[in-house]
Amino acid sequence: MTGNSRLLAILGTYKPAPWRGRYSLSRLFFNFYLLVMGSFVAIALFADFVISNAVKGITDDYTRKLMRGTVLLIEDELFRKPRGEWGRTIEALDRKFAYRLDIVDRWTLNLPPEEAEKLDGGELAIDDEGDIIYHRLKQTPLILVLGPISPERNPEYQRGLPLDLRISLLTWSLIGVCLAIVVWLWVHPVWRDLEAMRQTARSLGEGLFEARAPEMRSSALGPLAETLNGMAERIQRLIAMQKELSNAISHELRTPIARLRFALEMLAETEDRLERERLSQLTEADLDELDGLIDASLTYARFEREQPELQLSSVELAPWLEEQVEASRLLARKLDLRVDTSTLPLRLYVELDRRTMPYAVANMLRNAIKYTQTLIRVSAELSGGRVRIHVDDDGIGIPADERERVFSAFTRLDRSRDRATGGYGLGLAIARLVLEQHHGSATAGESPCGGARFTLEWPLSQSVTES
Image (tube, rainbow, N blue to C red; front, side, top):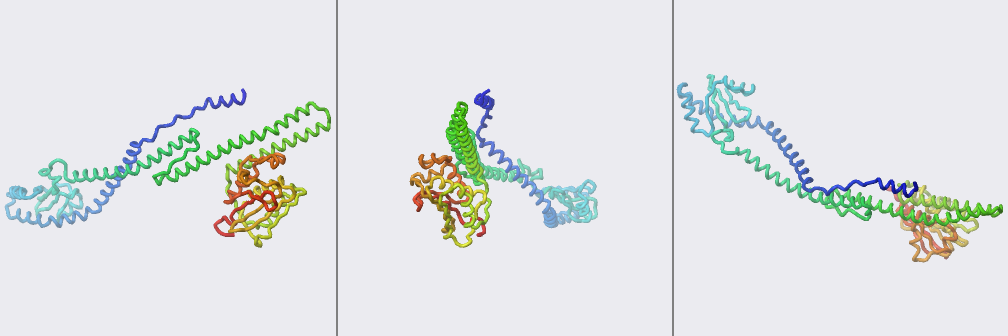
């Protein structure tokens, strides 16, 4: 099976899951409303239970004080009559009161121990509901009963729903309506934002990587939308970079591969030792070129994809810059490579990443070595709290309209500046990525030496405390 048929077979078995429907506004509203309303009712009932138990003792004491005078008056009226007439007397008094009056035997009552003790001690006793009052008629076994006092428990006054129940129903209805309005006003923007993000995520899943979530009206979903947009931008950038790298590498591979094929064909046809050595050297050079292309491409992809966190350290600039130049002096051979740090303050320290910044300086120096004629001048200066490193050469220079494009990946200018000298068009792109990580920039301009000037610029200090 060929590679293409294998790939088609793999893709043919993949079936993406169908997209689910849109968010249901009514379901989201009712679920959230029931949750909020249920929680509110539970809290209200619990609070009512706690408050009722807390004030029950206070309420009972107030009821005793309030009814004591009435009870004593009824008791005096009864004791003015013979005991045999107490029944008719209570019936006559009952017609004059809004609540019921009755006389029962002590043994018929089942009161809590605390209330029974008060009743036997001559005090007023109150039932658990706080609505019926009991009083022992002096030294007799008879108990005077007053109540139920509230009209809701008095059968003579019950007309439809009890008043407190009607008030409770009206109150809870108003609370429910108001809460529904508040929940709707909160849920509707959230639903709209969720639906917008769902549409954006669906577009991203369908390959429309330019899709972005709109500005969220709900502050709770704002960070999520920003994260989604950042992820989409990152994915779009990575895919664009991947396509760019794939196309550029495919194009760059053609020439050395064609030369390798031609050299191998020539090696198979010739028996001349010198010719075979020459072809072997050309083959090795092409392999080195392929290895360099792959290494440069991987380096660029790593900087573009990962954007590693900077590990800044304080470095004395002048010795560090001279060390970087010395590392590239071997490549310069007979060229005049100079370093000038005379304008820098004495013992100037800068903050940079020792792993990545050498990439930028080395690529600038390699670029200058390729295109200069005789002179390369490296200088550094401090201006406005920013460090600038200039790399000047006396080559053919760069046209003004091409000075920004040279920092794009796999970009070469005319044949006289790049094709004859090799390279892959990645060195300057890597240098710019490194400087962007340092919150700086890499630019190209005209050199005082007559050729091109490349400048690396970044802040002197990037940490919280100044060095």
